[in-house]
Image 1 (cartoon, rainbow, N blue to C red):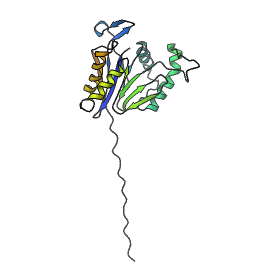
Image 2 (image 1 turned 90 degrees about the vertical axis):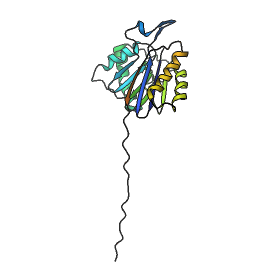
Image 3 (image 1 turned 135 degrees about the vertical axis):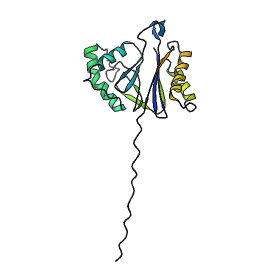
Image 4 (image 1 turned 45 degrees about the horizontal axis):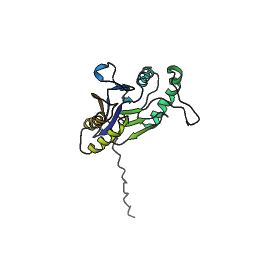
Length: 207
């Protein structure tokens, strides 16, 4: 497994991940591996995936075709992006959907987090997404990361420090999470200022 975290504060979104891989009880630390990254960039979005390392390879291959839609600007558009991708994942990448009578829908084998100028999001296997106001975490060290980020969020002004706190706690207590960390950040799109509507009082005409 792994640990991936996202946070946003003071107009900046940030995503971070550990760099250790695990094969059962075997741990592969970053200085042994060349392709140790768990985060990729698609258009203006940084996407980190947990679970099997094949997922990141598949995602990079799929989005290498510029004609395939990619919009991670909202939860609705993330759903539409992966709804379109689901067919091709089965046809071209032999994705197992784990369909059974207990599953409401076929699953897409992606679970992770996104940071982009529109905010911070979580991706789920049913192609749905959630958007967060402050921070979130995914992976085997998730609980440790969430606790650490909760404790420092109001104290730290720099969002990178918040992300580092979450990853550091996970690396300290989760056996499948290890440093060094990779961290990326981007500026958030600031919402347009609301246009003030004001009434023009009409002067009463004198007769």
